[in-house]
Amino acid sequence: MHIAIVGSGVSGIGAAKVLARLGHEVIIFEKSAQIGGVWARAYDQVRLQNVAAHYRFTDFDWPFPVDEHPGVADVLAYLEAAVLHYGLDVRRSHEVVSMSETPKGWQLEIAGPQGKSNEHFDHVIIAVGLFSGEQADMELADREKFEGQLLSERTLGDISAFAGKRVAVIGFGKTAVDLASMSADHGAKVTHIFRQPRWLLPRRVLGRNIADIAAARISTRMTPSWVHWDKREAIMHKYFPWSVKAYWKASEWLFRATLGLHPFYFDPKVRKRMAALSPDQALTYQMRAAAALAPDRYFGQVRTGAINPVQGNVKGLDKAGVALSSGEKVAADTVIIAVGYKAPEFSFLPEKYKKLMTKDADGAQLYRHVVHPGIPRLAFAGFNHCYMHMAGVEIATLWYGAVIAGHLELPSEDEMLACTARITAWKQTNSLFEPTRAYGVGGRFHNYLDILLTELGLKAKRKPGALRDHFLPYLAKDYAGVFDEYEKLVAEADAARKSLPFDA
Picture 1 (spheres, rainbow, N blue to C red):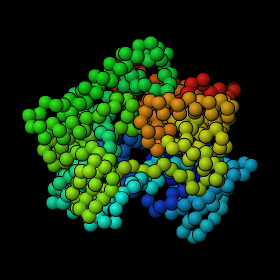
Picture 2: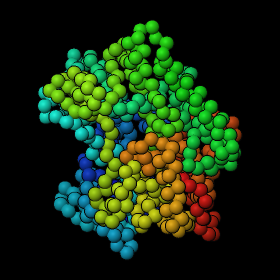
Picture 3: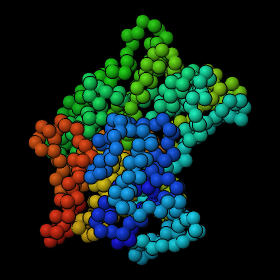
Picture 4: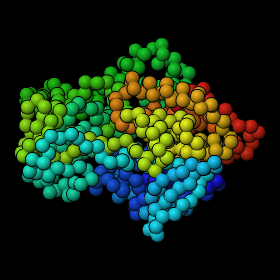
């Protein structure tokens, strides 16, 4: 089939290479001149939170040496190498302006260097990413009175210019804590302002990289979820919830100890600063699409006073800095707003479908985190954001490939909507709000991928032996064989498979 993919980030490239392998004619449309999606717009010092062994395509290793946590330049170079390796057709500087539904697919209006054109496709995959929209802003009274610089991560410039300045960073996501730490590294006096402290995960715990701990099946097995595909896991969560709570209480204690979030400091000022960073919500409640790693020096900088954490609500600005609703003033020469991104708006979709995707504040819950039951011949790549993200995109795209080929039969639209409603209710009750909450799988990736693989008739557990499969970290390469297995299975199948009665 003739398939268009909108977006050339890791998800668009991953989806394209799977569909091309299945024999489809695939074109990626990228509105900018640089592939990479959010990576192409990242600040220079950003590094991958995950490790290189997890953040790669299943059958294409990093073709050059990289650090355990590669930087933005390495990720972009890897994606360029992957496009060449897979022989993908990427149309750079080609923006999908609009999509019109036809009886057999979609008509796309595309704006390119030579002007506008129209092309018909049988299916479209949207891979614009969860963080591709505009940066979220804040209601700030009297911002015009501020005499310093008001910046965001996309307007930062050279952070070394902050040396000797008073910098206020607003927000508590990965970007905010990164920028607070980087500013302090360059000699700024930093005030970190936030409404609520969030859980930051230590990079290493008991000598192990936390990425290895999070990628092991034992970790996902203990994670509360809307679905527990494994029967023993389901029994544990239903009948022995105290064991799950005990596991996470012990984990929280260990993380606090590792990060230094305890009251046993002689200096009362240090105690006060560290207490301001102590989360008062359960780790599992804040475990959304992703959890942020603590920058290596952040908590040390708080202890020394290079970063002063302040919990409070920002009321506005005055000429000298930030005014909090408590009446407290934070003097600053530079204010950086780092409060995340707005939800994707899908401006190119027909109005009725755009409303379906944007009517809920936390995004649209997709069936299998891939398709909207009410929108035909359309799928989403990367909107199943999880810890094993790139492998997750590939497997979800293989699943969609089976659907469009008639090898996998989906339930009725009503049944799919009921499934997504149950997941929505669970997420809204059990996880912290964010504009993309509906799209997150997060640390539940084993539960999710196991169901997709089983629906396809493929082996879910990819490591030999129960102990290895339970305790060793999963790597992206562990899923490399699924495509050969699928092709063999399809060649031998005499009927379409049925969707499983699980929410995923």
